Image (tube, rainbow, N blue to C red):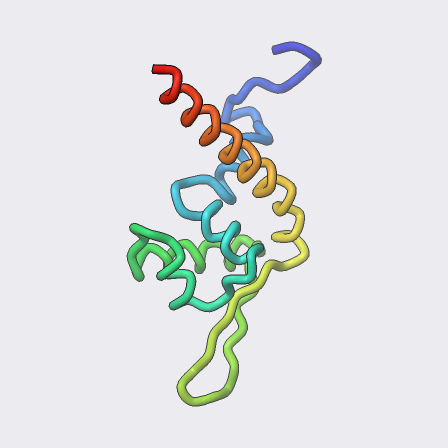
Length: 118
């Protein structure tokens, strides 16, 4: 690789591999995108993410909480109210999520143009 960049070797403390261990997968970036956009309740998140199951959302939220990315707050009311927000560490991921959003929007436009050209 050029400019002294590290090769993506998981055995060699690759920073990309490390990042993917924390926020990789199908659902975690989408969950972070939702929370960054103000979706902070489990039920609302479940409805906002097509295709995710309750079990998978619960698992992913727990992993993000264990990794110090999310904070789970249980409010002492009946019925119980739980919300999620980004920790300071989680806030540092917002630029990454923003770049993913921007790339996704640009690529969606590219695909529209490619289909129109056919």
